[in-house]
Structures are given as structure tokens and as C-alpha cells.
Image (tube, rainbow, N blue to C red; front, side):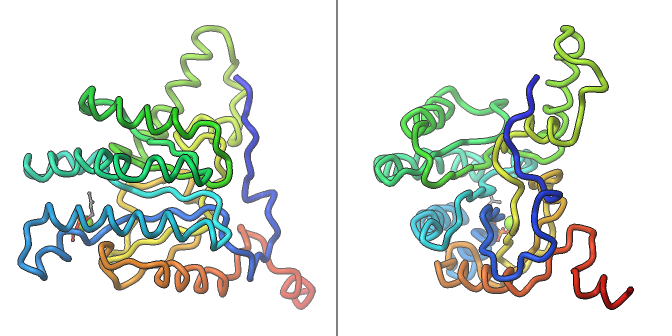
Length: 258
Ligand code: IPE
Ligand code: MG
């Protein structure tokens, strides 16, 4: 197994204030509350959430973001009522049906990351088609995490390596952080610089556990269906005030400490 090209925090500058986040990940949350406030069924909240996703995917490339990973359905969301799960399962189709031609034209490469387990044949076909139609694009990378769980992502990567060892293609000593990371669902994408969660909740909910090691977190008090490019701008502005040190000290402090 060869490690794919990857950017690790170790290779990043100690202080990246002002630099825009290259990879932004968003936990799209608050659809249900948005609907409830309007006395609408939760399903309509999810549909409005897809419209917010369209707005953000359109706006992100102009903000110098190159990778966007969005959390659409978690491995834990199966425990929701069957009717709601059915609506959530229909969302990728709702999104790609209207938008895939534009994504293809505008140079967006789409990947749907997560487990195939439990997804219908139709849904998998729609996702694989979206990936194939955009496979040659490299202007902007959109990962849609669907039926995704961070723990499952790590276990799958561990299983792939264990299989390589069992088949004699790798030795236990070959395993490095970079090699392991390249086997995660986000593959050759750099880890997210910024993880955004709207709706007021402040937790990761099993999203990109490994990849989040040195991400900055921004939590925003807006429900996802109301999310606009201005909210993303605000999250980026907040990110740019942060002082990322990756466990080191900033040069000035190191000098002051002698
Ligand atoms: C996000 O909105 C959609 C998914 C998690 C699938 P929610 O459905 O979680 O909305 P709230 O949290 O109930 O408001
Ligand atoms: Mg929620």
C-alpha cells in the first residue's frame, strides 16, 4: 500500500492567521427545529436544508475554499422514525437531480463518502453516477458524507490495512499516520482546517474524528436551512482570528520564553 499525497498539520506553518481555510467541513444541523418553528413537518426542514447546501456549494469556491465536506446523514440517523429516514434517503437524489449538471460544468468533483450498507440500489446508483460524471473535475472538491460515521471510517481504514498485512502486501511496521490517513474516506484531501456547526449545538457527533485533530471549530446560532454565504464568511472571518499552533508555540512567544 502506498501513502497517497497528503497535507499534514506537521507540514503547516505554526501561525496561519489570515490564511483562508482550504478545507471546510460543515455539520448541517437544525432542519427539524427550522420546520418546527414554522409548524411544518420535519421533512420540509430537510428539503429547505438542501437549498441551503446548494447556496453554500455555489458560494464556497469564491471564498478560496477548495474542499468542502458536508455531513448529510450519520450512521446514527437510522434510529429516526422510518418516514423521516425515507425523506433523508431521498435528499441526494433531490440535490443531484437539479444540480449535477451545474456541478459538472463548474469543475466540482463530487464524492459521496460513507458506508453503502443499508442504502438502496437506486440511491447508490445516483451517488456513483454523480461521482463518475464529475470525476475529471479538480477546481473544487465536494465530499457529501452520507451514512457516514467517524468511528466506522477509522475501523474501515484499520480493516484495509489488516487485510493488506494478511495478504502479505504490507508489514505492521509500515503503518504510519500518513498511510493510515490516506485510507480514510476523505482519502487524499487535507484534513479540515475549519469545522462549522450551525444550530447552536456544540459537538462533533461522530463526524471526521481522526481528521478533526487540529481543526478549528466555529459554532453558529443559525439553523441550517437559514444558512447563507454571509454565515460562511463570518465563520471564515472567525477562523482567521485564530492562532493555530499545532501543539507548538508561536515564534514570538518562544523568543520571549528564551
Ligand atoms: C440536520 O437537521 C439533518 C440531519 C441530521 C440528517 P436535524 O434533523 O438534526 O435538525 P434538528 O437538530 O432536529 O433541528
Ligand atoms: Mg440535529
